[in-house]
Length: 214
Image (cartoon, rainbow, N blue to C red; front, side, top):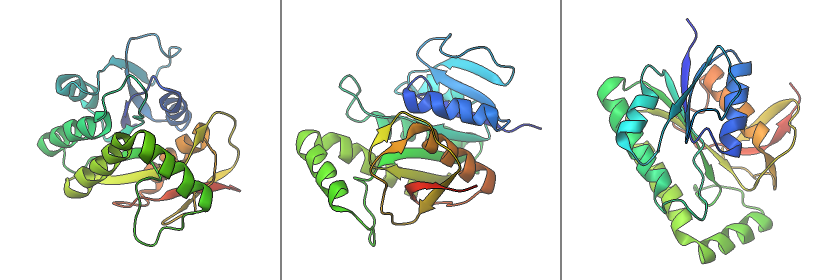
């Protein structure tokens, strides 16, 4: 039986890359989108209209899913608590339906752990974000706290700066970095597939530190 993966914020650039990688890996995907028609038809793909701030929409998206992937990011129009609100919805639904559901989430390296190796550019970039948009970093930290206290077997992937472009080979994940300066969204998608397939980094926050040879 093919595992079904629900993807929050599938309409974004990172979400689109993730959906494509999951389909190529043979997963059935329930893609949460603003409106249908975001993706070309695929026999393993269902598009589900989903506002991640609406608990009912999130519940419909997660129906029948064995794992959940959050590709939620912040932009000028999003709620300052979009990440933590959506994860709170997910955790409530998971606790009620299937507590052993795996949840993989994407966040920035502004979420720090003791022992993290933080290059100067990483430190400077996150200092600028904290000055201009402190609620963004606070929201990322809150979503981590919720996952750490919740029932789901989570993995939180941390990146510094997302970019478009190709990704070849494997993915190098490290517990404490350092993060590569620019991470292709396709590499994030490959990392999602990797941790789902391997069951690796359970209840951990690995940093995407670059690519590796397969």
